[in-house]
Length: 121
Image (cartoon, rainbow, N blue to C red; front, side, top):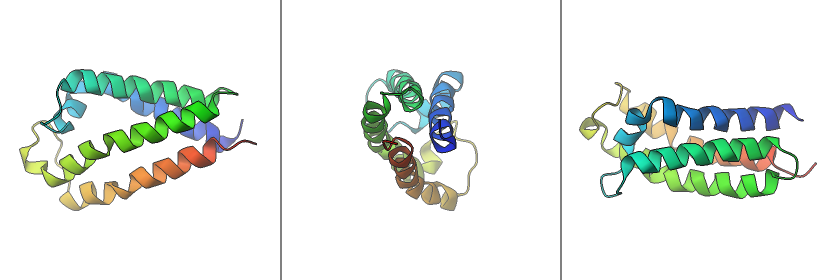
């Protein structure tokens, strides 16, 4: 297994597990127009874990790629909401506003990582 594949898979498994360890933090950034914040946080965490495992398991890289890319697109509104409404989000640790905006392009970097890590050998 390549180091890139191991890094990518491990990153998503870890990120997904954090949704279960610190769900309140993630619930706080779900946009208010979406229902069932806790359920969305747990579902997205589970999807990250499953996608991360898929990156690591031979033969599952292609479905993991598409699942993780869909997930990254699906959570982008929460990241934009956090950048736009930092002062309204209770439970968000103090973070410089510029850092929340700088974080948004990382969604594209994570997508590129997923694509590269799941390329056929």
